[in-house]
Image: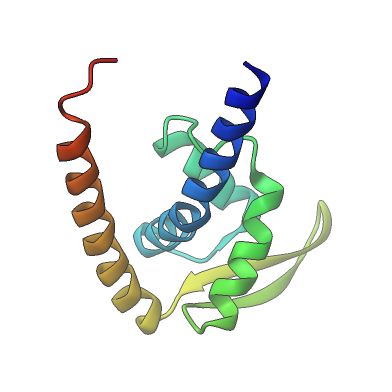
Amino acid sequence: MVEADAYLKKFQKELSAGTVSLALLAVLAQASEPMYGYLIAKQLERIGDGVLSGKQSALYPVLRNLEGAALLDSFVEPSIAGPPRRYYRITEAGRETLQTWAAAWRATRDSVDSVLSGITA
């Protein structure tokens, strides 16, 4: 049983690696204004039915990687209630990448669903 739990955790980690980037781009593409990390995490939690909840600290390296790839821009603004906040917004390259990744996600999801359709839960 312990080994099965370890395999499940490894599978979930590998599965979430790309999906978090896709979800972050989608949230920022739908945002009417730039968002900082905590707001992004709360939006992911709200619209993702909590699937990505509890992983807020894991979002920041992904945000930095997306920015490094020129898919996001960021800027820092002072906060009256604490340290300065870094706000993120999606770039045009990010929007194009989101469309490509979303199509790849849907194709992969549909393919895996087809394979799994014969399995009973």
